[in-house]
Length: 191
Image 1 (cartoon, rainbow, N blue to C red):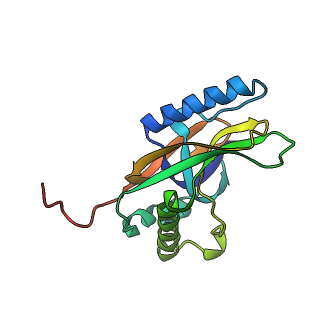
Image 2 (tube, rainbow, N blue to C red; image 1 turned 180 degrees about the horizontal axis):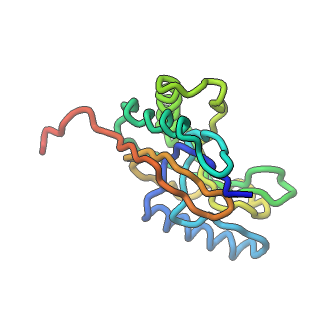
């Protein structure tokens, strides 16, 4: 059996914020010393939309449509904020621990996702292949006992690009297939 490739459109967490999340991961490990599978700092992200799982390789026609999406995006850079650390899944079993945001902190991600969905459809992606539910979050640990819900100091950063990622399932590796910078529409008056 070959490698499974999971295709995603996502926003990566910048290095400095990934370091802050690393501190949260260490605090979790100290307060809950049991089983844990933290996400590697260089793979921390917020998925905008999954584009399917493929055995052996991603079909060329799928990649062609997915890559067209970037040219159709018309979003300016924006700030995003995550302020809650929480468990996801059954509260008596091991599950994920994630960062979540509320209201205006993640609203720009919701807007960007709507635009990505529209661009995918415009590029020829079948609407039936698009997952309609969306919950902005960042998974920080894949296998952890429940930690409840706790507010944290907000982790905030500027989102400046979207990436198309091939996640090599089981290998812990993300391969960047495309980068789509978010562009300011108006030039600065001070440049």
